[in-house]
Length: 268
Image (cartoon, rainbow, N blue to C red):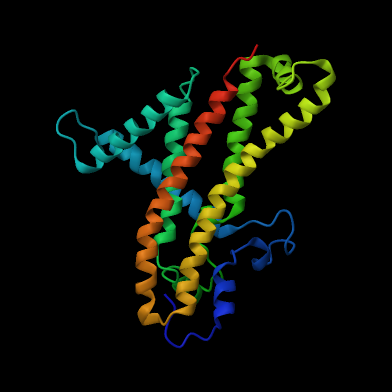
């Protein structure tokens, strides 16, 4: 929440909270260069990922066949939910898909949940106590993070397409679909290449757009409403945003399963 007597204007406040702590701002690289690293996004995404792995490993080690505890019960329900979606959607035979889908769903859900933390709860002490000028705590509101995850899915699509169909089969799929005639090869290649590249781009931009928009609403509430009344706007939006957070994680997971299922289809 914005503090009483905050010196920043609303425009400066919004700009400040939409700025990443990047390597160039610490003098570690060229300003706005290709190799600029968003340190805050990487830090929180790795931290959340490690925390997720530790939690699930801890539950697995302490799992009991008797009456499970609440945490074990929640984890088992989540695993069964993801496993059922994989069984219903994935048509191939690959033991990697279910663990991948579980990892994607939980990791993205936890990163999205960072959006529910009050706007100034972490950036304020980071700036005033640690001297960190900028801090964005929602990794999925950074297009670099969402695009990196989408590219991971894209590379798996290419890998399994070639593994299942062979290089020749994969090339023929691009050249002779949807029109199976040699004269249409250039058109097919253009169409299929655009369709292939659109998958990771749409996957990344959908998640980024929804989470960035949600973060902007929280920032606008903090910037434009008095500090003592911000809860009136932020709490209802946070309750609604819980649905957005869950749906976006689910959509990313389901599209990952669908795309990898398509990669495992051996076309003739």
